[in-house]
Length: 147
Image 1 (spheres, rainbow, N blue to C red):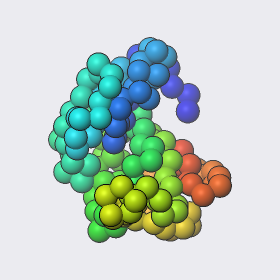
Image 2 (cartoon, rainbow, N blue to C red; image 1 turned 90 degrees about the vertical axis):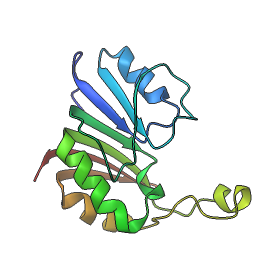
Image 3 (tube, rainbow, N blue to C red; image 1 turned 180 degrees about the horizontal axis):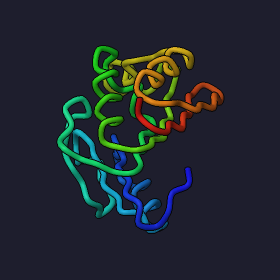
């Protein structure tokens, strides 16, 4: 994505923070955002926040992998709008299938928005000039520039 040392990156839905450690190794200034910090394994800058009610943040890059499918459908646009307003470019990876582990572990699905790749493309296109690669059962999108 043409990232350069010194660029800022926010990982929306950072989970363990391992991706942030990786990006920090590239010389990026990194911050993780997640609704819960109990999964965080890395010592990284962290903001506890709900993704559809984000605090003031800004970065050159946004990174959001394996997160959007966990957002309730009625909140998808709020999350995408918030990320678009706070970054210059973004990378998304989104699962398009139902999860198997949620029903087994907690009795309910973890993937709350299970949609086809074309649906996600339409959603991302509302907020980004989007270049998208479709791969397997997921959507990998590299989005540049807000609309």
